[in-house]
Image 1 (cartoon, rainbow, N blue to C red):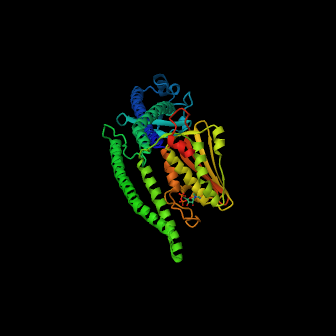
Image 2: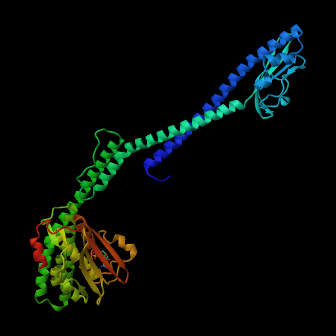
Image 3: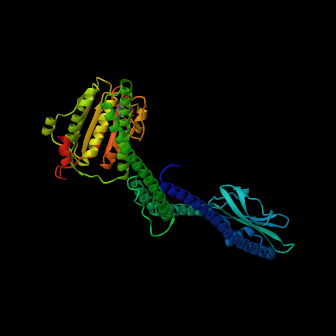
Length: 482
Ligand code: ADP
């Protein structure tokens, strides 16, 4: 079964209610039928006794016109009843004629020679009949009297009761289901609140806790259990971050020393056979240093540490300035870099965002760096900034090798690389894009990618756009951009 817990509970409740109403209805109808038949049988018995009394008196007094006496005293044809009187030997003393309402055919009803008591008689013409037979008088004047009534009026009463029950159950059912829905809705409201609060807790705000209701019910227990779990997660995350932080911090110093020493060695006249080795060592140290810097940046972003600078930034200017700084690298790789010139930026309407300029610059550097790395010589890379009414959009595109569709959802994962052998220059580490994503989230933005293998890729960064007067413009950003 599908649907929310709320509708499932109401559906089950509705089914259960229908079952209860069904059983109750059947029991009430059977009880009602039994009651009506017993009442009718009792009145038939009284009537039969009266008929027997009248018959015995008539036989004693020698009054032979029993038919007339019966018509005057009981009028069975006019009242739609059946009456038959037999003597001990089974000889019929009296038998009523067809009733005026034609509700049964008396010719089809057996003489009262059979069993005593009340029973249903089938096939008496139009419908069933309830027949009560008694024995009266002492031998030799013993007689049997049978009297019957059509059951059709009882069935009409039964149908009336059934219709009433259906209406009452339908109204009760609707009221009960409506009430049940409200009850379930009320009972499940804490689940919605819990879900919303739990959705709001990410690795950035693990110190927050879910609200714990004052009344300790099942939801209170669930809340508490989830909070204990979040506390354990927070501890594990902190442990992880501390480790990453400490490790990258400790690695920085020896790497700086190593790089310095190797650069010094490189400058001196190294014997020819060692020159390549020193250059390759320097490359590897550079790569390691970049990796450590990236890890350090990630650990700071994960910790959600406050940035040193938070200000209003002209994103167009920042993108252009960063692209200009990287133009030489693009030319080195034989790529054409397309971006606004600083002059164009001056005349165009600026697109402002709020944030940390050095981190946003890191995003642009990482995206351009990837575009350079994954675009073969002769290709083009571009950077564009545009704005909608509420969003600032930065796009970095390239005509490079592209990303296969199945890898697209994972490119922002840590240490994910589509194919480790693809990066031709220095073999990336697979965390550049996860840093981009973390910085975007810290700026309440998002990053998306579109790509076609063999044609190129386009990364789009979307940040909330701010109006020019919101925050003071950054001094640092001015210097970066200029
Ligand atoms: P790396 O250091 O390996 O470049 P990233 O996190 O920056 O790590 O990127 C993850 C993976 O996404 C890369 O290994 C690469 O396979 C793929 N990728 C990123 N940018 C591009 C691009 N512009 N064109 C093609 N593939 C890309």
